[in-house]
Length: 270
Image 1: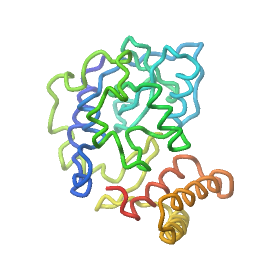
Image 2: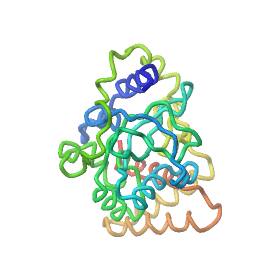
Image 3: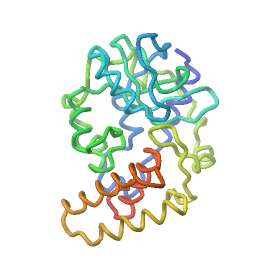
Image 4: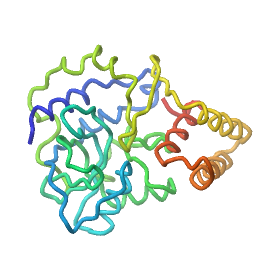
C-alpha cells in the first residue's frame, strides 16, 4: 500500500470537524465514523469476470457486485482516485482479503479507507429509503451511523470484510497537510457520493444552480403545507419520481443534492 497517499487521506479524515449545529444532535461526522471503524484496503485491478459499473454511481455499482456474488462485501468510506485528487466519499467491495475492488473508477484508486457493511443492513437501508443511498450520508433518516447506531457495530459491521489494518494505524500523519488554511482553500470543492463536485460558499452553505434553486423552493413550499411526516414523505417521493422521469432529466447525484438542500432548508440536517 502507498503510505504517502494513505497519510493524505488520513490527514483529511482528521481535519474535518463537526459544526456546532451537528454537535447538538449527532455524535460524530462521517469522517470520524471512518476513523473509529474504518480499515485500509489494497487497490486491485478489476477481474475480467466482474462487470464495470456506471460512471458516478459507485453506491449502485458496489451493491450490484454484492448481489451478483455473495462472497463479496460492500464497503463505504473515503478514497483517493490519484495522488492529485481530493478525497471523496466512495463505495467499493472487498473479497475478505483486504482488497478494494472498485468497478466505478476507470482505474483503481490509490487509497481506500472504509467500513465493511452487512448485506442485511445495506438492503434494509435501501428499502427504507426506496433507493440505494450512502450509509454514511443517510440524510433522510438523520444520519443514523453518526448517532447512537454508530456505537452498535453488531448491527452493521461485516467482520468478514475487515481490511488489512485499522485506518488509524497508517503511521504518523502529517497534521499540517490538511491544516485549517488548506481545508479553507478547498472549501468550495466538496464532493458527493459519486465524486461529483458540489460548490459551497464561504459559510459552508451549498450553492446550487438557479434552475435547481427554483425546484428547491417549490419542494420546500409544498413540505411546509404538510403537517405530518407521512405527508412530507409523499411530497418528497413524488418530487424524486418526477425529477427522475420528467424534464429537465437531472442526473441522480443532482437529484440527491436537491433533496439534501431541501432538508437543510427545513432544519432537518446540520
